Length: 350
Ligand code: SAH
Image 1 (spheres, helix red, strand yellow):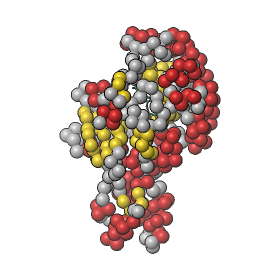
Image 2 (image 1 turned 30 degrees about the vertical axis):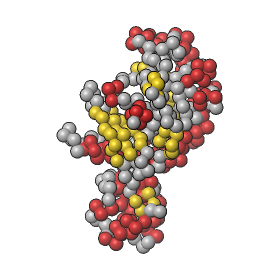
Image 3 (image 1 turned 180 degrees about the horizontal axis):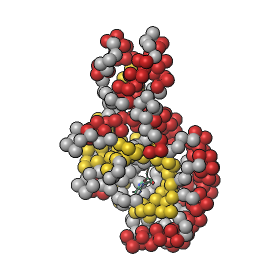
Image 4 (image 1 turned 135 degrees about the vertical axis):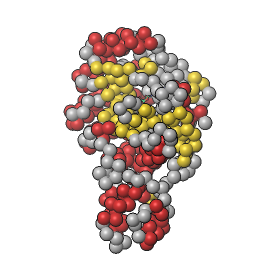
């Protein structure tokens, strides 16, 4: 089987090239074609000899990522892609346009095992992990496609691992993806511009802390007591709030990076003043930021989830309760609601 060249680190590519008698600097050229010029065929590598191009064609492949569906929001130009991978499986990628920079929401798995009650991602179960190249290609294809539009080239400045899947459940591939993304010979994106969101796999948060990558860690908390969290996030039976918060403390101490906590507000479940106080007590010692998300009512297997967002006045009140308790919080702007931009919605609708 041919090797997936986009998943190879620079060092690995270099050793493959020098093993067949090529000069080291050729690896740099090839890496540049793949990760900076984002070509899709070895024949486009015009400064590489015919012989080396033939070698690459014989032993390596550049995986395709095909646009199966593309939706552009009429409100805010958010673009949602449903991409098809080599084996026919689909994933979603969302391009969000902000005034200062464009942000890309990338998927890390096809499907999800975590089964959070309000999320559409796991509706059809878990299929498989994505390879590092399949994560990179979401960025490269989206930039390539948007570059064809009349509004000109769209370059992505921020990247969030908040699409379909649980990034820390695909740990090694995600770490390799981050290494490739930030490689100075390649895309060279600073990990300061990357956020990784997890439902709270505490053991993997510990492993991530050891790597001190400089990215922003987002933790999907959504409830500040175990009883409530158990109802909506099955992961809480494995890693309860105490275990999770202890991993978060360790992460903060080791990396010096403030954690951002995601809190999806669900009417009559986690949206009263008591919940706000409990939440504040958990996150304040970590000087953490809270991102409030009005829950998006998704349809799973034809059934609408019972999770509904509270009214705007309640969301504002919850924000005030947090602020009053000394917590730095924001309410997430909802983008692309007309194009099913919440996690897994497009994939599960198809
Ligand atoms: N598995 C990771 C990343 C994917 S989800 C995680 O759990 O963090 C990215 C964020 O969107 C998470 O905070 C998730 O809980 C939230 N989310 C998923 N479905 C949602 C919905 N219907 N409404 C609001 N937030 C949702």
